[in-house]
Picture 1 (tube, rainbow, N blue to C red):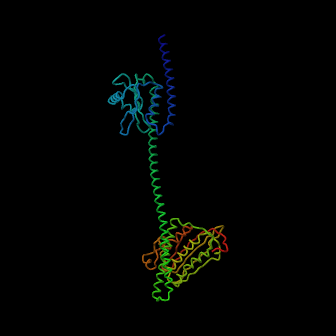
Picture 2: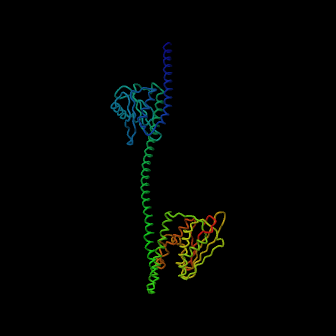
Picture 3: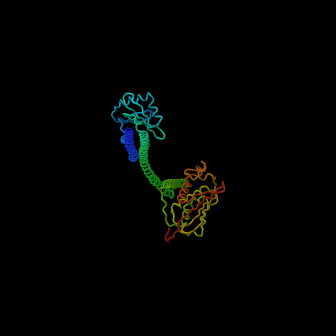
Length: 446
C-alpha cells in the first residue's frame, strides 16, 4: 500500500512538472509568432532555424538538431546542424534511415515519428516542414530516449512548432521572391528612366535642330526670294523691255511669290502641329478680320474675272477675343482655295452671329464657290498636308495641297471643325463655327 502511494506521489509530481513545462512550451510557441514581424531582406533560413531551436529547448533537450531544405532539384540537403554529433555521423545515420524507408514515412505522414538510431544508442525524431502547397524541408532531432512515448505532449508541441517554422519558411520564400521582383522592377524602371532621359535629350536636340531648320528656311528662302521679286518688279517697270520679256518677268515674279506663299503655309502648319504656335488673344473685330482676308485675295479673283462677295451679319460690330492673324490666315487660305478651283461665277464669304449669350459669341463662317466641286467623302483626306483630289489636279492648278490642311488645323486649334458640302461641277461650301469671348472694342483698334 505504501509503495502504491509512493508511486502515485512520484507520478503526480512528474505530471505537474510535465504540465508546467508544457505550459511554458505553449507560451513560447505563442511568442514565436512575434518573430514574423522581424523577417526582412537580411533574414535567411538559418535565422529561422536558430529561433526554432531556442523554442525547442524550452520543452526538451536534443543532443543534435538538423534542418534540411527541399531544393529545386527535389532533393533534401542539410542546411543547419547543431549539437554533439558531427555532420558525417548525422549524414550517415540519415542515409541509413532513407534505406529502411523511415525517412519516406516521415515525409508522407507529416507528423512526428521516432525511429531508433542504427549506428548508436538513441532515437531520431523526424517531422516534415511544409506549407499549404509544398514540402519545404525536414526537421531531424537526435535524443537519448524516445520522447514521443515517454512524454505524451511532446509530439503535439513539436508538430505545432514545426508547422509555424514551415509557415515562416514559406513567408521568407515569398518575401525573397517579391524582393527580387521589386529589385528587378527597380532595375527595369531605372533602365527605362535612362532610356527616357536619353530619348528626351535626343528629342530636345531634334527639336532645337528643327527650330533652327525652320528659322533657316524662313530666312534663307525668304530673303533671296524677296530680293528676286523686288528686282523683277524694277525690271518690269523698265521702258526698254519688249512685251514678251515683260510677260516673262511677270511670270517669274508670280512664281517667286507663289514659292513664298508655299513656304508660309508649310512653316505655319509645322509650327501649329508642333504646338510651337500659341494662340495670342487680342480684342478684335470680326468685320475687319473678314474684310482683310478678302482684300488679300481680291487680286486673284479679279484676275480670273470672278466676283468675290462678302455677306456680313448686321451684328458684326461685336468685339471678340481671338488671334486675328491666325483666323485671317485660315479664312485667306479657304478663300484662295475656292478661287483656285473656280473658273467662272463667284466666291461668297458669309459670316453670321449664331448665338450671343452671356460672355460667349458663336460665329458661323462660310466660304461658298461655283467651282469644279469635289468628292465630299474625300474631304478628310484633302485636309492632310501635300494631298489633292488626284495627281492631275497638282499639274493643272499647282500648289502643294497645304491650304486646306493649314486652315483645318488652325480652326481645330481654335475649337472648331472645318466641314464641307460639295457636288461635282456644282461648287463647294466650306463652313465652321467658332465660339469667342466677347469684349469691347476701342476706337483705335486696327
